[in-house]
Every structure is written in structure tokens, then in C-alpha cells.
Image 1: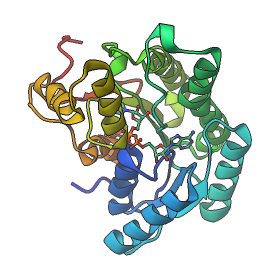
Image 2: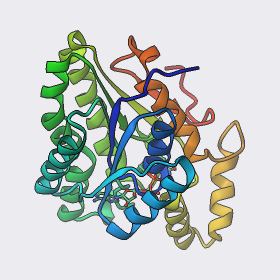
Image 3: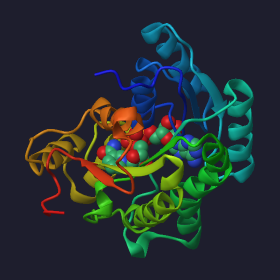
Image 4: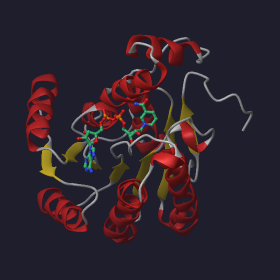
Length: 263
Ligand code: NAD
């Protein structure tokens, strides 16, 4: 299916690795002009050269710490200088630190708030006015299945990602008349560095090996396996597409059936 994305421009945040990187790959493959960003310049250089090898096109990249307003403003400015517009904004972020309520400091909460929720608000603030003028846009937030079912030991993620869902739903109502859709993807357990690190930290608590922890996660999933990042990215590409024009304010689980609720 041609998703109609040739010539669209997309900014994907926190995209040097993992789900963000897979989303960038999917959109570049669909013919988008891509901007990627993350905190680490070396990781961006690696991602950029891998994408050039794979797709024959180098993405535009920019160092951006999602916890810093100045970095976010700079990123939007340089991407607009480069492409003149941003049609698709994929708000991904690094995972907040794991921990139960008893483990977390005020600083942990502030860091997670800035990265998980405030960065989404900030990017939308800077990008949506131009989408409104052009009467077209796609905002896609990468959240987690934790928005449907809290996950043990992930207090920050469980708490703040639901804020993204509330923000997105409210925003979707405000901007729908301008052909701007706002949706969320809720990935289940996906094999990336983040999941590996979580498995290592859980293994320390339980005395299992991290391989056993990962196998235990897979056993909870009806598909009996973890997701591949590109399976999350396929949903990003579809929500960005012309065909997804009437889907807004939705949260789409990509979780191999992990969530057991009907809705
Ligand atoms: P990952 O660790 O593989 O990649 C995270 C990316 O974010 C990297 O490119 C990293 O450089 C970047 N990053 C981290 N902190 C940043 C910051 N302050 N500013 C800018 N960039 C930053 O993670 P992932 O597994 O791809 O997860 C992406 C998001 O999806 C996370 O928020 C994670 O919690 C969430 N999620 C992941 C899973 C999973 O199983 N992997 C499941 C549900 C939700």
C-alpha cells in the first residue's frame, strides 16, 4: 500500500536507537524527509551512516536533550531551516528511571516529567501553529502499555504517560478541524536497549539472569515473544499516512495481545 508520504517531512525525537530509530527507518522508507535527534552525537552519527547505507539517503540530525527547552527550540528551528516545514512529529523519549514509589526522589520525578510529558507539550507548542496554517499534520506519541495496565517497578512511566494520553486526547479535539491528527502508540515489551536494561535491573532484584527475565516477559504475551522495534514503527507509519486521516485521539496498543482488557 502506498501510504502517500513521499515528500512529507518528519521529525522523530529520541531516535538514535530503539523504537524511535525504527520509526525513522519506516518513514524514510516511505519517502519522507527525516530529521532525527537525541542527546548523544556519536549515536546520531552511527544512526545516520547506517540509514545512508540502508536507504541511500542521509537523515538530517541534531543533538537534542529532551529535558532542555533550549535544545527543543533549537531542534525545531534547525529542522524548519532545513526543510521549511514539519508535517509529522513523532514524540518518542528515553524511558524514565525504573523504581517503586519508595525509590524515587523529587529530582527523578522532575526529570521524568520534563522528558515524558513536558517535551511533548513543548514540541507541539512550537510545531502545531504552522501545521494549523498549512491545514495538515500528524502528531504521534510513543507511550507504553503502562497507560492501560501499570507495570511493576515503573512508577514514573505509569504515572506520567497517562498525562500524555490526556494531553493528546484534549489536543486532538482542538486541532481536528485543521486536518491534524493526534494519536498515541502503546508499545508492549519490545526488544531494545531499554528493555535489556530493565531486564538487567529486574534480574538484580529477583536473582534470576536477565535472559530468564526476558523469557518471563515473553511468556506473559499471547504471541509468546517480544516485539521487534519495526513492528511498532509500522504502526507509526500507518498513523502518519494519508489513509489514517480519520483516526484521531486514539491510543493503539502494539503488544502481541499483552493487555487483557476489552477496551
Ligand atoms: P532505547 O533506550 O532503545 O532508546 C531510547 C532513545 O532515546 C535513544 O535514542 C536515546 O539516545 C534517546 N534518549 C534518551 N534520553 C534522552 C533525552 N533526555 N533526550 C533525548 N534523547 C534521549 O528505548 P526504547 O525501548 O526504544 O524506548 C523508547 C520509548 O518507548 C521509551 O520512552 C520507553 O520507555 C518506551 N517503551 C519501551 C518499551 C520497550 O519494551 N522497549 C515498551 C513500552 C514503552
